[in-house]
Image (cartoon, rainbow, N blue to C red; front, side, top):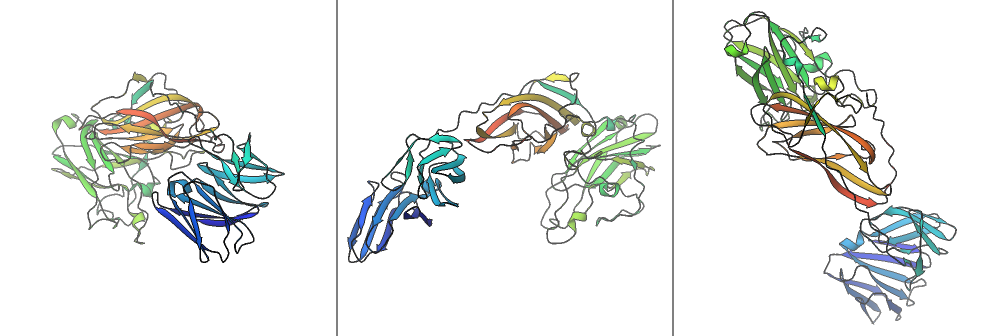
Length: 501
């Protein structure tokens, strides 16, 4: 594993599988002085060869010290199995090289005077042993003195084990408040400030349908997040169905309303071998139009929400990142109404969190995901929850953490529900987008909440923007905090700026 000079001796570490017999052979014309530092070790010198053997894993780190023979400097042989080797840390300092045994992680080592100052992490209580430069007589660990004694191997060994990590207790998530949105689906919604879909040509690699305006979201400055479309037409006489062609990437989603009545939801299928990576892959959702969908008199409004799954990354240099996102064409059966289209995506980029943090949902555009948003008038609800609704529902709660400042805790958010329930959620922590959970697709159920964005000693705001198709029950189901790992030590993580408004 390594060989280096530490103080007045050389150190060589050999590693192997647990349960294997380690065999190390040294050339030595004269019989050397061999000191067994572990009972498991055995040795024999015969005809100029010193053979050292030991079963690995029988007792942690196994040591043998060899002096004399053909060498001017003592050689310390350390034998370790794989698990034990993970607790060995070589480190170079201006005062000389050293080897540290014991902690889960060694971060820094610095010799000041006769004291070696170490920083790092522990998980379980563990021994600390150091083979270091000459003149080192004392140890500190994470700023605290560690009583130690000199051993026969030339090391400094802590008299008592380093402590492990204290228990980290996480609160249950409760106190949820809920509010439905998607007013954009209502026929009376004011879309006069939205972008008019009036372009006739596009820089996209996706073809513009003949006789139709460009509906691609990117051509109107909406490059990420959800996109809303509202098509207004005066006469619905004879309309039997509407077909909505769209491009949204694998598992992208489309849902539609006509005069405020849900038409249905469609999901982008997984591409087959012929369409994968071509950038031309689209799907078409066709919905029948019935009397209940159409108001008695016009004008009529076709509202469409498209949930893209981001752009391609141009694998194979085929310009697939230029493929359209959003609606690509709209056709009717039974009649050909003249439709005037407007669209709206993400609003102004968050000046702190950046443009990729929030998309085009009504709640995102109005700050429902931000920690300072006033939600006192929202309805109180308990989770798990079962609802049947096509559209977007928001859930918000707050929680406090009190993690010991000397503990590096990695915390995640875990969501679970019956796998046949088709709903998905954008996850916001203190206003930052942590990712999208898709309940009936998976496989990811736990999302890391990075320290800094997560206040490990203070209050946090969690918001879920749940998108459901209405054809299955939707959650959220169980939502909980999960401890992904913890260690005593770590480094100071500065709070990430997370303005409330």
